[in-house]
Image 1 (cartoon, rainbow, N blue to C red):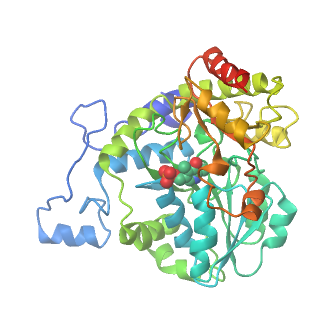
Image 2 (cartoon, protein in one colour):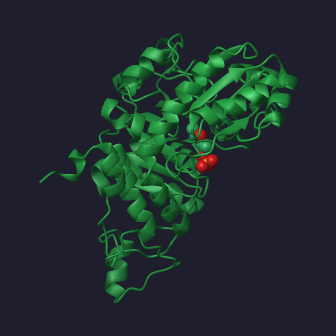
Image 3 (tube, rainbow, N blue to C red):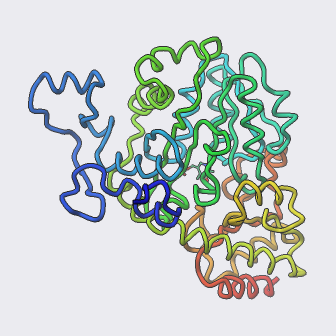
Length: 418
Ligand SMILES: *Cc1c(COP(=O)(O)O)cnc(C)c1O
């Protein structure tokens, strides 16, 4: 009989961890809507608190519904364990905090999700932590930025809205040659396009709010541990007690025990449930997201009102070849950016759209549009916007799974209004 891991991704995404725990015959994961769990004896509760059982104690620590989601996402990414959290930013913050101490440094790209950028610069700076930011796809610059105090390399599989795709396999080689792990935010690619552990990443993060849940119905995040990094003592002396306790899952234990529990970044089980319902259709949705995005990118490329189109699926995109290789020919993601003449053209264009939703989110099954410069990045100064490639003429589109002809028709009538 086929092992679960041998199934095609389209099958795995529906059946992974589908029989874990006692579901009483239910085909959908039960929602354990309880803050706390009963324990039959004082001895058992003591054993559970000392980590000798995996029983549940209290919702902020673990929850049976959330655990099913953790097992599914671990399987889909090919990792070794996961902690589900209240949002993607909870996952980014907890994973990085578990890796950092005051005075440490890390190296990252200049194509970061907006809140991740603010966390890395404004917040971490307060604690004496330095984020060395290099051009995301410049591996030489990345290598040069690593020094004795560097604790990890952090990259996003597909930048937003730069749509650049760093070579993760080579970034992992560089990180490992320096005895540090590679952390990857795989939100925009999803395991449908890219499984970072298979090409050398050590930690994978997701905002499950986006493609994994897919319907804009639930917020969530996850930190997944590949379990392959050995945390050399010279650079990671603070990992020793976690290695003693959990061996290959030392990092995940540190994330969970030191940060997730104490910062209280609890995922509501209802959100875990909604995320899992969404996950069932991930492969099918991604197939359509990527084919629609390519069609939309090609359509926009030949419109005279559009000054430039940025999508890694276009052959002249600087990341085209890397994306082709890294995503195994399955496509180039569902996000793209394009330029209009100026900010007022962008406003007029957005105001003329009829089908496409104007809101701050991505990875929804509906097509979404936003003008980042005047919204998410409105309070950023010009040099920072320039560094992050947020220009006033830029429109960002998260291409949904509607019929591409209807998406293009809506874009067309809005462009014709300019
Ligand atoms: C949205 C997003 C996040 C943050 O996720 P939330 O669920 O909104 O907290 C992190 N990284 C990337 C790449 C994202 O798109």
